Image (cartoon, rainbow, N blue to C red; front, side):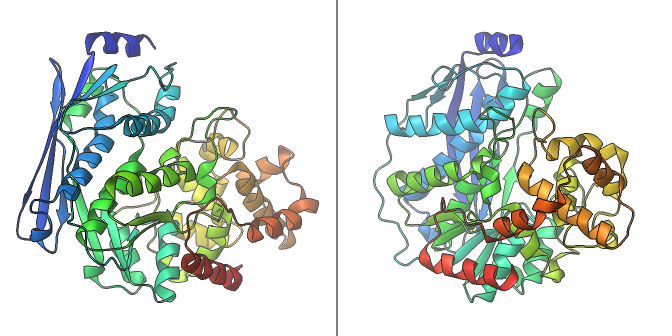
Length: 460
């Protein structure tokens, strides 16, 4: 908290100075300039594939999209000093837009504030000060939008979405931010060609890391908001109607018990609904943004996913492992452990070990993370993990299988029993309820609802 106040006093203004873009033969290159006067200047950038550069010429809609992505990017750099004023020199926001953006920043920084011990509120943490011009209305909207853009991160959720939609005959393109091996292999496993993957390159300004090394503030930001706005640009440039996310109902659960602090805020339905409305009211491209798996829990997704064996050798969800080439499961983090646990009722121990390369279920190094995942600590791991109830259900089902097969329980499962969490009499009731559950807080159209329900009936 002392750092927070000191840095704010020393750096009262953070400036979103400018954005620019230029078109090459196959891409549009986007650059931003953010400034902390007297301290730092940041120039991150993006490169987007573009099929027709004429779409960008004198296009105010595209400018609005680029400007908006800059607002989503800016929070990563602003958080180093948390300036009380955010000056926007290159565009304009009305009062309702300011409320929208302040909510995204504040809720998306919930973990950042919590971990850094910062006490603040949505009204006072920052003031947005628009100083630029408004954007004229544009008629550069593609006359017909068709097909789906499916963001693919290499994990089980987007693989299940892609497999289900392709099997239902939907026209799908895939989207990724920077290319990783697991993403390309997921697209190939779905039976799509290399040209189906549209990859945007994001250039992070690493001078921020140098500030962090000097003690300036660091922490989690709402990255999925960046996915949303960059996917919107990609869908717009390629005339695609739907941006089909793979966020589930479990992402709505708070990470910290008793507090509104959610590591996955920008994957929550609340943000999904807000973004959907922002697109309709301000961006006005006609693109429909929603999450296909929103009605389901992680447990249901895991059970459906394992029936598609072709993805088991290629899927990856480890943030640490994604920094290695080719991307791997590190086998040491809470995300790896969560995926292992949620799959444990549906795959044998040897299959799990084959995927992760290590027996996490029998590792004492995993005990702390395990305790957090089953809800016996102040907070869940600050990772994209499922709800406490479904982790407990998955572990209970796996333990029952071990017992029925007279197999020795691994260390983590023995701990689960010792803690009094294993209740065999209620397993079937909870399992049936979870497999049949359907969260009505979703934005699926009737067509997508029918596709998902048919796949649920077939696999669950």
